[in-house]
Length: 189
Ligand code: ADP
Picture 1 (cartoon, rainbow, N blue to C red):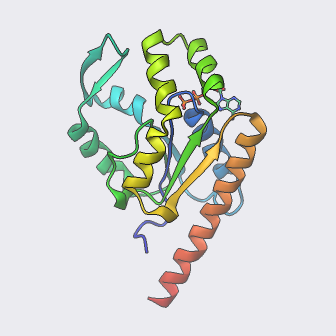
Picture 2: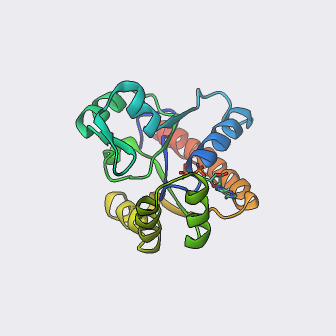
């Protein structure tokens, strides 16, 4: 049983699979859904959080990304995760302690569609290639399976708006079930 009143959800996947779009839509839907609207849902884009809190040792020109200071990031996130009702969105998942996370959603996308999305985003060729290879090799999915209990890892396709809507609906159903289970545990305690 969790000590949190509301779960923390991690949305992960290769860059371009739809994490930020899903997280934003999910938080909006959770804020509107009758059974979940009482919680202070927050979308925590970990990439933005790294920038805001200065959890990095500088900009990496080759990879066009911040070199993350993982210890500092974990210290800063520790301060906010305890309250629950967080939707974390990040492209790696093996950094967070298991105790922080109640559901891990791994988004998947066909690799040629992913290539187009990353090209549109203006990524350099090396970065597109690296991410495309990672999606084909299921790197994030394997990390998620190695880092968390099997029953909390869910794999969802993210290729169409309809799939996104369906995914958001499934996660909301999961949140309401989580609440019921935790309320049962509290009754039995
Ligand atoms: P990530 O946060 O994983 O890097 P984004 O949420 O920024 O990915 O999505 C990358 C691009 O792909 C955006 O233009 C977004 O609109 C599009 N996209 C993501 N998921 C879907 C989907 N299920 N259907 C259609 N377009 C999508």
